[in-house]
Length: 431
Image (cartoon, rainbow, N blue to C red; front, side, top):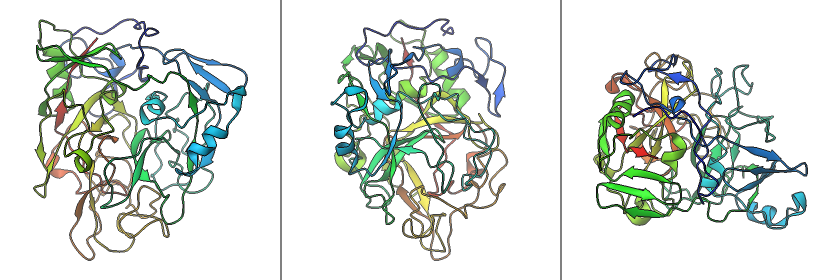
C-alpha cells in the first residue's frame, strides 16, 4: 500500500466518510515520526488522507457539513434520552422545522481524532491544560461539564442498543466528545435521571445506510461509501501486526489494502444486530466474521483494530482505537464499596455506567504505560469474583494497548472494568 496524498471526491456518495482529523504518526509508545513504506507502523491513519472536513457556518445557528450533506445545530442543549425526540422536533433553529436526533453514525461523523483526553485522572472535575475536545470547536459550540467529571461530555443519539448492558440495562449509544469514545448509556438516565447533551441534525436521510455487494472474489463493495472490504477477517494481531497484514495483503488482484480508520471501520457496524437480539455480531451477514471464546467460556465476537491512535491517558497515542462487533466486555466487581467506582447515587455498586468514579484507583496500579491514571488494578473483589458482562454494547468504540504482554494487563480497566486486549482482529479496506 502507498500513502494517499490527496482527498477523495465525496460529494456524489450518499454516505461519504469524513477524515478522522488525525495527521500525526504514532508508534506503540506514543507520538513518533511517520514510518516509511514497509517499516513497522506504516499505513496508519495519519498517513492516509481521506475526505477532509468542510463545514460552513450559516450564520443562523446552523452549520452545514459539505462532505456528508448533513446540517447541524451549532449549539447544544441538555436532554434525557426520552425527551430528545420531542426537543429536536420542537426546535426551530435556523427557521427549520425538520430537526431530528442524530443516529450514532450521523453523530460519529463529527468526531475528530486530533482531540486528546488530557492527562488528569478520569475522576477529576478539573479540565487538564492538555485536553482538546474530539470535535471541531471552530465550527461547533462545546463545553466540558461544569459539575462532576470533566470527561462527561456524552451526546445523545437515537440509536438504541438491541441488547442489554450491565446484565439488564436498556441502553442507547452515545458519543463522548471529551474522551473520544462510543458506548451504551442507560436510557432511563440511571437512578439519578441523568441528562445528556443533544445536538440536532437535518438533511441527507441516506447517511449511514450501507449498500453492500458481494463481489464473489473474497471482497465486499459498499456502494454507499465507495469502499471495498475484505470479506473475511484475520485475528490474533497486535496493532503493528494488523497494519502490516493489511499493507502486505494481495487480494482479488489488488495490493492497495490498508487497515481502516476508526470512521471507516465504524461505517460497517450494523446497529440493528447484537448477540442478544440476533445471536450474531453487529455486522451485516454478507461478511464472514470469526467467533471467539471469552474468559468464562461464553461465545462472542472480536474487537477489530482501526489504524487510528487514541490520544488518551499517561502516554497519549500508546492505545489504538477498536470497534467491538460483539459484546464489549467488562469485569464488574460483585459487590464491594462502590464496585468499580460508580458515584454514590448513580447506580448500584459495581454498575457505575461511566457516570463518575472517584475511587478508580491511584495512578500506576496497572503495568506501566498500559492506560490512563487510575485505569490499572483489578475490580473490587470484596464479596465475590469479577463478573464478566457486556458493559458497553456491540458497536462500542474504545481503545486498547498497541503492544505488550497481554497476560499482564489488569483484570478490568476503568469504571466498568473494560476487558483490554492487545491481540485483536483486522478487516482490511481499500478505496
